[in-house]
Length: 124
Image 1 (cartoon, rainbow, N blue to C red):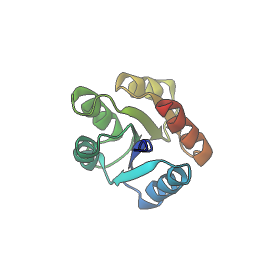
Image 2: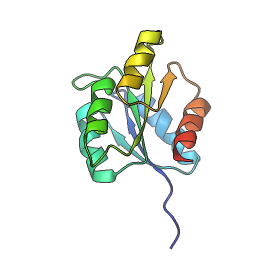
Image 3: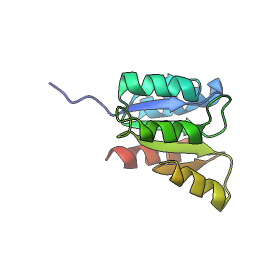
Image 4: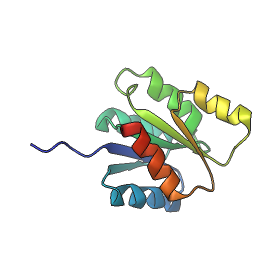
């Protein structure tokens, strides 16, 4: 039985950004699922058991930093690797991401190839 491709959950409240990320990951052979915000992400992470979660930092409701903390704190989702995506680039922002449990931090605007490379690093 062939091994399944790495599973990625893409979380962004902006549909255009979500689609851009999803298409690029699908073209690289990842199994890709989507969530529209932090709360949706938590539900889908428990359901899908993704290898990697890409999380936009600035989302309404539950933001990416808070969602990352909840993913890390839940035994059912804590093994997922996390890529935070944000326009915030100050050292304090990067530190907040790291403190929340992010494995990678990609800044907007981003090159889709850089994001794919970050996800690939986390699943290798």
